[in-house]
Image (cartoon, rainbow, N blue to C red):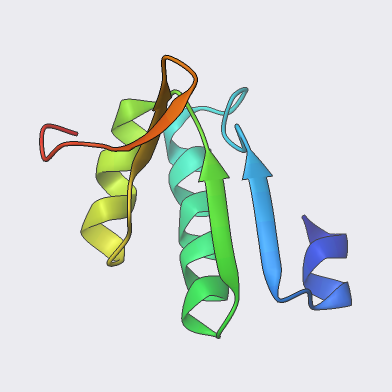
Length: 79
């Protein structure tokens, strides 16, 4: 993650960034990604963690998409 911040990319791709972290560390990492987004970076998070998705939705205006049946779908409000 440090390298991503140092090189200052316009887009940050995070594939299961909290997969092996406890909840507190997951929230710290999510807050970092939110801060990067607020500083003008585009952030794409791929995750199976519905709790992380719900937490992120409270912090930013985001589109939540899901891949199902080999197609991309807008996720419902139930997330």
